Length: 88
Image (cartoon, rainbow, N blue to C red; front, side, top):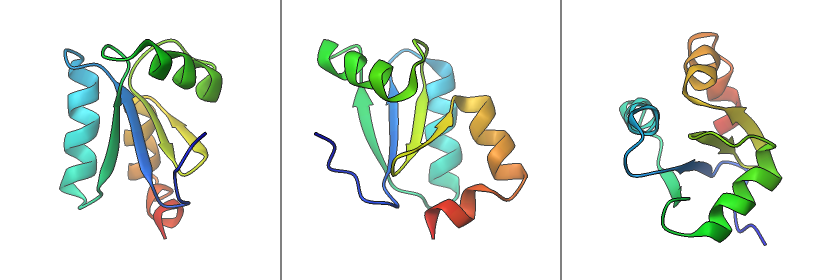
């Protein structure tokens, strides 16, 4: 069961993924706190990520229950000004 609130940003990733690191850096540069879920540490987290996103790759980023997608999707949403309203 998910414990996220509407403004909780969840990043599913691995410790070795450079796109995961870049996503976390982008969010941190905007002052956005994240909940990290490492799929390489816990197979159940991978299953959870797959069920929520339908995607097998990392990172997978959510704002509350809204699926943003991966790193390039996050950049696109941020640059288009669509990320900030989701966090409000």
